[in-house]
Amino acid sequence: MTFDYDLFVIGAGSGGLAASKRAASYGAKVAIAEQDLVGGTCVIRGCIPKKLMVYSSHFPQLFDAAAGYGWQVGERKLDWQHLVGVIDKEVNRLSHLHIGFLERAGVELIPHRATIIDPHTVEVDGRKVTTDKILIAVGGRPIKPDIPGMEYAITSNEMFHLKEQPKHIAIVGAGYIGVEFASIMRGLGCEVTQIMRKDLILYGFDKDIRHEIQNGMTHHGIKFLTNTLVTQIEKVDKGLKLTLSGAGEESITADVFLAATGRDPYVEGLGLENTGVDVISTPADGLGYSTRSAIAVNEFSQTSEPNIFAVGDCTDRINLTPVAIGEGRAFADTEFGNNKRSLSHQNVPSAVFSTPEAATVGMSEEDAQAEYGDDVTCYRARFRPLFHSLTGLDEKTLVKLVVDNKTDKVLGAHMVGENSAEVIQGMAIAINMGATKKDFDATVGIHPSTAEEFVTLR
Image (cartoon, rainbow, N blue to C red; front, side, top):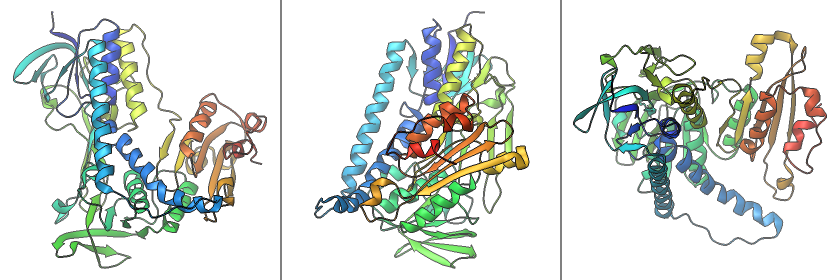
């Protein structure tokens, strides 16, 4: 049978872009459909604009630190409109850059939403096209709890387009998105209240990381309302009134309310019901929380419909940009490059761009103990970094290794403190190569640096 395309990709985010360009490089005829800006969550409303805001939020502390080194810093004031304007300009620049990459790769871009009609037919821009293979790479989208008044809340999508800087922002959710935006907004000078169902942020991370970040955020002036639920939101003269239940206050009033309670795979309206693609659901516990639905795939990103594949956040495996890129390239290599391979989801490093920053790779202490029991030893160091020896600021850094006693293999590396992401990226190479604690001990450190602490832990 002759098809219009060898591959039709739905979604021009990180995974879809990577897969389409790689497949085209093997000679495949490829089209990619995207109803939004090209680039996906990471470029448009995620990693890139968020990290730019992180950079901006660090300047006040740098201004304070400068005095310890003899610098006199005068009056400072944030121009909010300038900040959001230049971030938006950079996002659009990157989006157009990705369009250029597609053109040079020979991938046809169709700026419309696509719907699957049957396993080999897609409808887009009012026309039906046929394709040998379909790749779904539609990513995810933020969700809001089903609570009265939630229409007044914003999500992470809108955080980059606030017309005015809020004086007080309330955030519900204790995952990395809520934690990062709490740190950003506090650094930019806002009053921040973070509301969470449990007593500790970042469920699933190593416990030492969780405690260290939360203590650091509290030290920087973020107010945590733990073991607390939002039961209602009302618009009042002074802003938004949040009615609460639990261990904390009965209500608070803020200018802006951010719902950072997770993201769902964006599978609605794709036409999956016209195919044999299986969708798996997992309940999200808690008042007003929804059910997550993800596309089920095997290790090669293949769905239960043999010629339909899916990569990235819509599969809800590891929802990180480099993972989606890796999955997309592995798919293209397998299906079009005569190189059958899959992306390993083991020991994937990740970072939380909070203040203080954190990064991790490998097993947490809790996961290691669950698998190896008493054969696990943890090595830790907590100290004031050299930079702050003159600033007078009470900032700490934590480094930690999780080790299997029987094999001496390093199972996990964790860090909280400045430049954690940069340091842990290097640690990830060692851990993926199976480095032992002896290998770490035999490595000469770079002095003076924070990273050297990883090779001096005893």
